[in-house]
Length: 330
Image 1 (cartoon, helix red, strand yellow):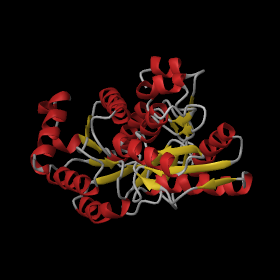
Image 2 (cartoon, one colour; image 1 turned 135 degrees about the vertical axis):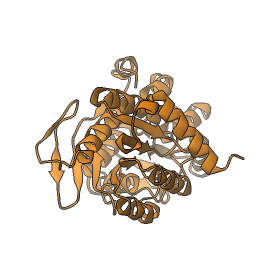
Image 3 (cartoon, rainbow, N blue to C red; image 1 turned 180 degrees about the vertical axis):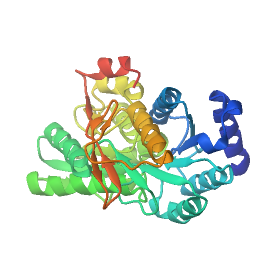
Image 4 (cartoon, rainbow, N blue to C red; image 1 turned 45 degrees about the horizontal axis):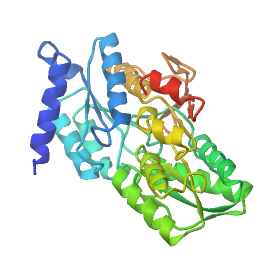
């Protein structure tokens, strides 16, 4: 097995070559550490990172660990500190685990951003393209509609240590209890939704243990895909509804087959662009301001107390929109 130091080093070299880093000083670097490399969601985000980097004339690039693992992210950030980059942005697997290494980054004079981590300690700013409650409630409303407002359902998150996924789940469950009391959560949430295989197995097990299971809501880019495949293979399309955010190109067939009913996402490529644009702003010593406009996102709410920058730009993924979204490269 490749040691993480060698793996991250290879990734960094690849990223530097891709952006012509030989002519750019390390102090100009903006590095984005995502949850896991090689999956469609973050491949799309990387395109946005490259696009904004090129437009702004900065050396922006992405590091993707081999699995959604907190220790790998920490090690990646440590390597970036050693390289003396100017800004490090992270899409956290474990917000708590990153706090000590974020402090080391600040001690080294490096700005730190996060995405999908609104209560992150140690970050200069966190960036969101939707609100927590809105995202969770919108998905639960779609699931309730598919289930007829009653019956058993399960809920998945990418990991039990990802604060935002769990906040979405909290919002969804609270909304269900208030508006759809005849729906019932079959078990505590499962932290499997960043792994297609784990989600597939979990969904199979749940359908066997609960023959009357009527729905799954999955927060995590691989969750709806794995659950949808399990429903399709079990020939339960129309009986078990799957809802959640995912990359349209990866899940297009499952949407068309009815194995995934609906999902809502922000454009990960746009998220990559926004991260780089905010990173360039803070790298230049400027502060985000409430109501400022970010290209592609529009005006944003800047909360200086919580250090959050929030926009609102969701796309529905369903049979009516799937071809358009896939055509956009999502």
